[in-house]
Length: 141
Image (cartoon, rainbow, N blue to C red; front, side):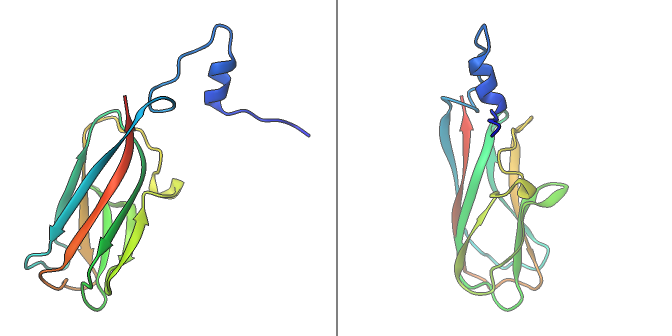
């Protein structure tokens, strides 16, 4: 039976031993928290959720939300790629959802520049005065 090793393990097993990037080992997990109450909003409106610093390695995200109304969905991403981290999350009724949690949704991506994470309402106009809150976990230094 073959045994495999990760790229990070190979660096620690090399002679001489190679240093790992802090985002691969010994880095600090940080949280970028966000919360808002929907103001009068419409389909295709966006919200700036949080900033993540350059060099951070994204781990995962989670958010909770009130009922936004029939047919309303929510994307999470960046300018130019509005569903990079979550696509068409059903927020029509109250609930919670994880995002940034698969390779297809860019988990463990290392950012090459400071990034503003944005949300986008789709499907229908969201109900006013609905609370949303959540976080993104990332590793840095």
